[in-house]
Amino acid sequence: MKATIAELTRRSDVRAALAGYRHHLEEILAQIVAIQQVAAPTFAEKRRSAYIEAQFRALGAAEVSHDALHNVFARLPGRDAGRPPLVISAHLDTVFPATTDLTTRREGPLFFGPGIGDNSTGLAGLLVLGRTLVERALPHAADIYLVANVGEEGLGDLRGMRAVVERFGERAAYLVVEGGLFGQLTHQAVGVRRYRIEVTAPGGHSWGGFGAASAIHVLGHLIAAIDGLDVPAAPKTTYNVGIIEGGLSVNSIAHAARLWLDLRSEDAGELERLVGQVQAILERMNHDHAEAGDGVHLVAETVGNRPAGAVGRDAPIVAHAEAALRAVGCGDVRYIVSSTDANIPLSRGYEAVCLGLTHSGNSHRPDEYIDITHLPAGLGQLLLVALAAAGWRDSPNRVLPDGRHA
Image (tube, one colour):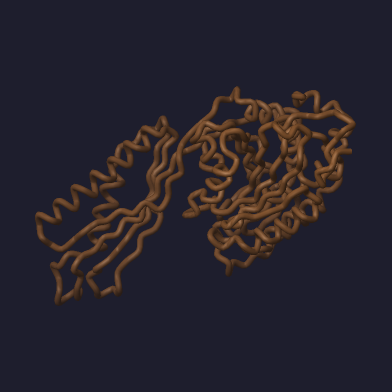
């Protein structure tokens, strides 16, 4: 049967589970740090994937598996086999290279360490949730799949979540878990396009070849042209040249240079318009250089395409998420537009929301931190949403973790 968040919070077994998060906070923090200590750069998540898989198996989940990408899946069986599943995911990867010093430190309620919030805390949330559901035998109608997925950051381009959504399709509801962002819900996805633009030119010696076209100088003109683009404040639309590379030496006219360009918008149409403006700049510059015959050529390669999309706040999983936040004491619920793993199901119109477990800061910096003050409430929110979205089953004929009926 369906249960409201309010009904769930009146149940003694659920209330005991919620209280347990505060009582066992130190154990939960130890789990977060254990995950954080396993390096997981995008495209190199295999070690952390194996760690999470072992933890899923230790929970006693009915089925644990991984796919070719190293996405990891744990199934907690529900009572109604025909009911659409609930997929709860957290990404494995971080922005930090494998050689990063992962030392952590604590200052009162603050825990510092690269990747501690994004997304070691989110992954720990999956394990804590799974342990709660299994050990307390909290009944639910739908199968719940806990999924640790690869490729959320940077050039991973959400490849892990794409595979997850291909597997479960439109029947599933999707709950995406981030370590930070407590009190904030995302049901509208920012569209993102990313390009690597290469400039080639004859180059030469800075003295003897003076006057020959330089790829770096052309790149400078390109950046200036991009910086002059007209973008609306609403819907918010942005551009950014995040990396520039090229050249051989200070006394060489560069024969090659490149930049990495990030384009974003809350609106799919505005994003397409922005992409069209950039393409027009490239076409014009290529035309002008061809006319000049100076040997310059510009080529753009797409390296990322995160689709935009949204569902309404009245979608059941979004409504459950807001109600759960209020139930655990969050009086200031905010809706944000963001780029997360939820982009993939949202872009297809599937029921999905992204939520956070605690407050964090300095994301993607070595001094990243989490503030654990609201972590028990964030975990409580996750439990309530999971039970409400999966459907409460108050039946003596419950399904045990190994798939047998009690």
